[in-house]
Amino acid sequence: MSEINTESNNTQTFDAAQITESVEAGEQKLPKVDVSADYEASKEFSVSEIDRTSAGAEAAAAATAPKFEIPAPQEIPMPADTSGNPADFLSMAKEINPAGVPGNVTDDLVQKAIELGTPGS
Image (cartoon, rainbow, N blue to C red; front, side, top):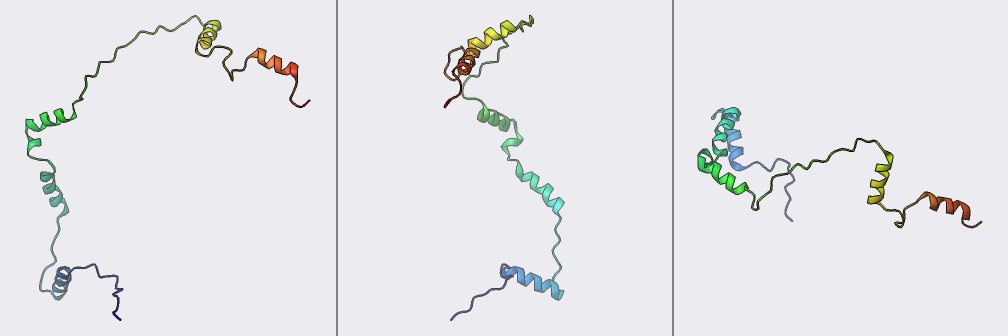
C-alpha cells in the first residue's frame, strides 16, 4: 500500500524551499519587502487611464444617470390646527376608522357585553 503524506508543512513550493535553504546557508540574502512603497505603487494601478481624464467623469455620470425623469419634490403646505379642540381630533379619527367596522370596540359594544354577562353563566 502507498503511504499518505500527513505532514502539516506540505504547502511550501519547491522554489520557496530552495530560497529558504539558500538563505539559511548564507548563499542568498533574504528579500526585503517595503510594504509602504508597494502600497504607494499599487495606487497607480487602482485608477484606470480613462478615469484620469474628463472623459472618465463623463462616462461615470452617464453610467449612473437615472433612466427616467425624476420630478423635483414639491412642498405642500399643511397648516397645523392650533385650536386644540378634542372634537376635531375625534372627527379625524372617525374619518380614518369609522364606527361599525368589524373588530372595532365602542363604548356601546362594551355596555351591551356587560349587560349580557360573561359566556357560560
